[in-house]
Length: 290
Image (tube, rainbow, N blue to C red; front, side):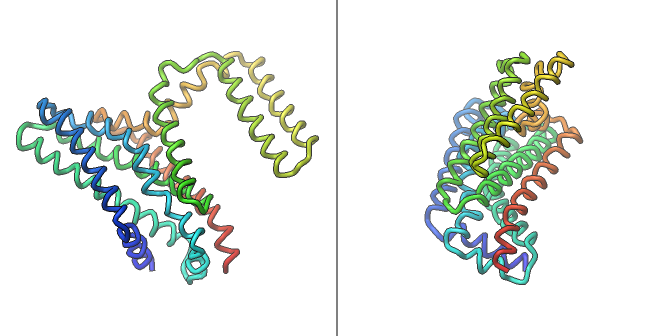
């Protein structure tokens, strides 16, 4: 049954000419970057080429994932899908594999460039293989993020926009890590903003001021007491958090030809967690329709 769903999802990606236009544009831009930046300059640093291509994820990921679940909700086909005698995990796996297959088409095109490098030079294959593994893991993680976002809305454009913003934030914040404030004040302001947003969400749902205010003051007090009792708790927190949890930062070791087990585990766990978040959200629709 997973195979049947996988074929259905994969075929649906190529029903419209837009899919071919999208792939053609991606292949065109990847080709232009390779030709002008590497081939003409006799530059054999293929991992650098992959690192440059990660910026294209800002466009690729939203377009690949925006319809994964939102289209089902919009067309009401989720009602048919969720009433099929198959587990919800099979639906998740089939959709994920279908998007990965489309992503593999883009990856496959990159191997053509590797053959060109092999023909005219002597590329460092162990380094390239590790960098490719990291590139695929990074793409798979961001695809899982986009699918999770798509499962929360029935509007494809909204899903694409939110995914675009999410991936863009990851790219920008990772690039700005060296200049992000390291002071405890900056970290406290960030956490205060997060607490304020969450308490505002609570108030929006419950329309009860007192519980929201109590929650806000309690969390704020805990944070301030923690800072007072341990002066270094929030110092350098934001840069350290980005270095430890940003997928692009984790990808950098792969791109440098270094295979760390903790980075590998990070990507695998991230994919599983994001798919599980999608599972929890779809479970509401799943049991509603059965």
